[in-house]
Length: 285
Image (tube, rainbow, N blue to C red; front, side, top):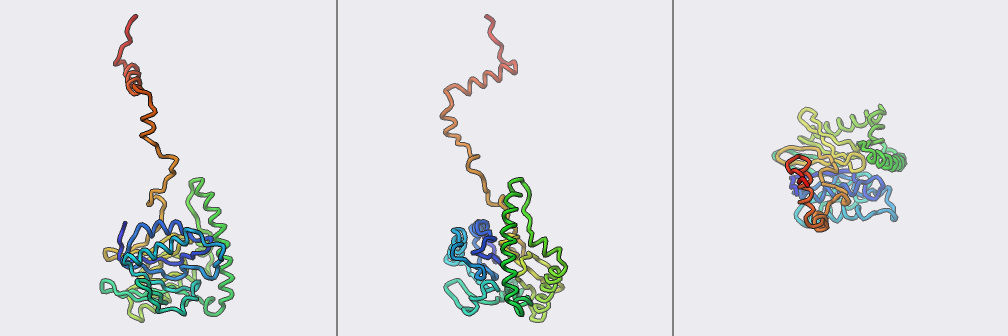
């Protein structure tokens, strides 16, 4: 199990069909960080349905509680999809802290962490449009997951419809660029060396002069996290091969295979092989 100093995850969107909870659970079980930051939209209260909260989603919450009980400091920062929790900001339960933003001092560097929905004009001036857009986004993700299952069956990599749309639509690209610039400018004014956001679902580590902008991405499209260890930040990208996922039907039971072999069978095969190689000559009658 790895023990990074800080791990930041964002935009998990538990309780939605697009959430990759099983993959996130494997990742969380592989680490025991000193500090875990959940940077908004952990539970999607906008799209929450009582009939849909699978076991894997519950296990993700249980794993985080286990980490907190084992000594990990957990900071839950609220986002727009779990904004109902903002009325409880400042609550502390053991090692779990609920807040809207967070400032960490690490290796003489000041790190400013918040979700980032405050920069979204739709969230501020047209929340109804934002909610309608969220419903459309969820349906797009559901279709995307269905398509990706078929792509994986044929050995092709996953693709992100939403990501392609964001990067191909001019206004979407401009929004992301302005989002990053605004976060960096505010961080510069406040004297922070790092600013970490979520919200836009685009994993990123990008320096802007004397301020570095980071985004943890999400567990809907990109399956990414930010990790700080050995004095540097890096982006973690989930991959099945990292966890030794295998088909149990491919396992060979060596004990049963050896016990079912007739006595002396191996010697017979050795003799046949030697005869083919000419090392044993047939007896003349």
